[in-house]
Image (cartoon, rainbow over all chains, first blue to last red):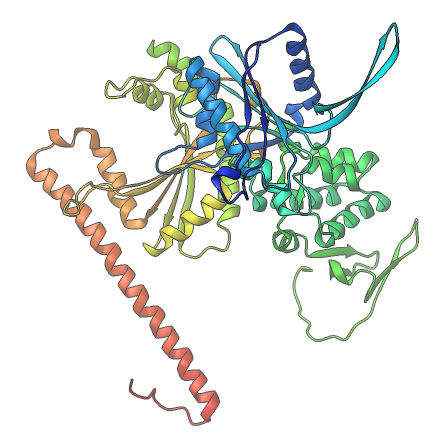
Length: 340
Length: 225
């Protein structure tokens, strides 16, 4: 794709500035495209690996089918120069309003590429940094302190990627890069995707949780090795009790599974896009779908236990040949043709 | 043009069928435990219907890339018992699928009776896409959901077969019959809602009576209000 448009702004926060006169305007505008700038942008796109990032959908007004950020992105990609510039200014202003006064100024970069009637629009923020510059002159080396630099590699950088043709039902989804989206603070986690981009994750929390629960259950059913099964059971317990709320299936596999069991789990993912889809975990849904562990003993006895009772009233011991012991008071019993 | 469009559409029907299955499973899961659902069904538009829709001269503006633009290539329908269930189901579906458009389709004037249905256009979520979906650029990003009561559906299906597009071509007596059916369907929905509210209030009264029995130990009739 051919880069044909770049705008850059130094954006200052203004969300909690009470008086209009205290709001400082963001500075910037259209940037001349040089060879080195083109190379830098292509390098940033490559480093972002958008194909592995969370899918996000614009939250659209359901009567009018509009979203201010989507409309500005489409104008930036397809509009003539004046309209594109206006759209860029609107987005810079919106970013400023989304940042509160505790935030540092950022470099806000918009880029547009084209190939035929397809456009690719990328939005970037880079945090401000300070750097040294060492230069050599006949009189000796000089060290400069550069203050107006912005980091291309910081984990605080954010980006978004939207592609498509100019149809009413295109540019509804994209990919977002945000290393802070799983931050414990909701304000930080939601700033880029929800507050600025006006997007939500492509997969709802309940859908993602159901899929995760079903995959864990299916992997437990398929895997024979008890050690491998234990990894899955540990994952179930950890997901239910640890404070992290946002996950992707890829991250669950990365954090809790290894070796063959990880491959078994990943093989159950329906497609590549789902592997990296971020969702908000719903623990009630998770618990409702993974409530019991069921054991079949060599005596023909079946034991069904709530997950939380393992290690309490029900104990499993041994390595190669595992045995189960359980104690408790009988409060009900039934007769059936089949167990369960 | 028709044949080319027909063949182009038909060439991806196998993917649309898999998408249909995934969306139906997801909708059933999302509505699991919800009361008063009569049925959930999904369908893939036939190639013939697709071509007819695309070539309709009333399209304004006409489709440029219909394989991408037509949004009901896969569509689902949820039928519920009562009017009050429509909003409940709509809310659950909007929580599950990111919605880009919602329309309550109904006659424009209050004194008119005709087709009525609740329509959602939603983004296709990533996990229901079959493998190979994202490798193509001739597939839609959205699908359609309709929510109706049983009576709304009874009218909608029969008048659709007759051909709502040509309603002005129908004899006047037939048009009046259809309007009567639509009005009766609307009235039946209202009556059923009143019956259901009466039934629910009766259940509440019965439970208050039981509480009265527990607290006094004497039972007997409810005191006059």
